[in-house]
Length: 493
Image (cartoon, rainbow, N blue to C red; front, top):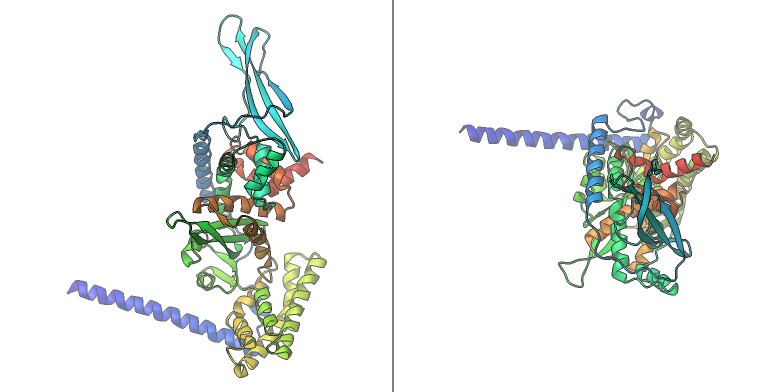
């Protein structure tokens, strides 16, 4: 009897919660319709205590925990065996010798020999052999032997240097040059390396970037403003011989920092965004995909829509209803004119907000009232009807960029970061496995950041591969492309 009463009570509580949520959604919808019909007040976007200020920072305890996890990851990768035999170095290449003597006073010691380690290295359009010659010294009194310490290498006991690996990865993921074409370049230089060896080098180099990528995931989660989009990638499915699986790169762009995170997921469903968005708080800017709509309704999340997507819907309606489509496009053009003025005058965030409230808000109110009036006499299945319905259903999200001058009017910055993947698809068609697709996501992330901060991707990657295993885990973020470029600029001053 008690269990039955408890179940009934729990059922009533769930029903009350469901009705409460439905009431709140209906109330919000009525308020939105009223704003579209009568216009939005300036006060709504000024000093609203419910809105969050940018930027956000992660809690110190979370940062400390992340640093410990990164330290463990670096130590694991450093100890991980990765040598599976080495390719023979070609004899015709020039050799650069680097002599390494033990540190300290050697006056009471005598050189008894040396150890030679070689790696294949390159400069753009130039291959050469870097030969490390480590001299051995023995104490005259027989008390031990010392030898020059070999620098940290990307692939232990392997022949590729950091520059060669950086060239291969930049060629494939930045310049969309498949590995088999790069092998042809080696062959033209009379350097014959098996395809499997080049593929192994690529994999090992990407694995070295994993700690930095994990740090990027942690930092992305703590951002208070994210733009999100997704793009398909074909992946060979080991469970279905000869078949390709439709996977997706989910791309998270933080506009305030200019950082980009690619995350591979085998699905486009809601579970794919769970890792990054489940605990997200702040401004979330997306297109109209239903998964984003669900996250946008969460507490502590303000959902921003994309005016570029709304504009495209009206552009598609030009052949269907040119007069009304042009009227809408003209008003949207006025919104973009305000954004162009803000960029040209290089206004600060508070100045941008003021300019938008003065010049953009009246246009948004006029467009909202017009859509509210016209949609009643428009066929829902016509293209102009679809365009109006798209904006109508997302009116609050389309207006939300007025809350803060740091916010963008559209999602175009995120879409721009995705373009290299689309170009790459035309050249190498698919990823070899789900694991390979995720490893590619790492390098896509950092090359996108390089592009945003105008950092040379080859130079950044070479420097990172040379330093990532030796750097203190607390300084790992120094290897981010933007921080590398800043350091490079300071050293040249």
